[in-house]
Image (tube, rainbow, N blue to C red; front, side):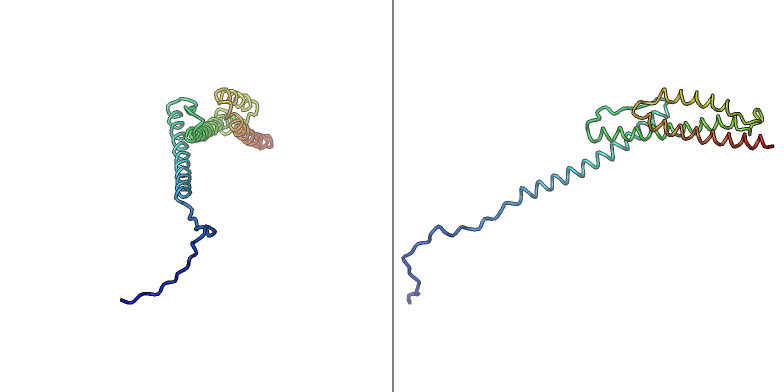
Length: 171
């Protein structure tokens, strides 16, 4: 057999060369996946809480109950449940306000047979009584929104009756 020539050196390798270090990225990747999953679940909890709040408040309004508060407002689902319940309560109250003011307006705008003459004082008296009744039952955190809507509706209907009165006075 033939001998294979090899390089022979008496030097031994030294520690000056450092081996490349490959980072373990599995932990960072897992953290990113967990963070994304948490974001998705948080968004799902927000949506479900909001929808549950709207549904619960609408059911309560249909049954004649007034206002529903979330059991735990310090969770994502609980705080969004409260937002949904507030939105449903405001929408239901606005519908009731609009219907009640329309009934009062038709009594005093001069279009009915019983009251052919527009009557601003009668409208104001009943409208203020309606305002007091509604605001007495509205939760304090929703009063600014409801009061602003109610005042806008009262003002618009007052202006309508006033214009009807001016038309009647010209005749």
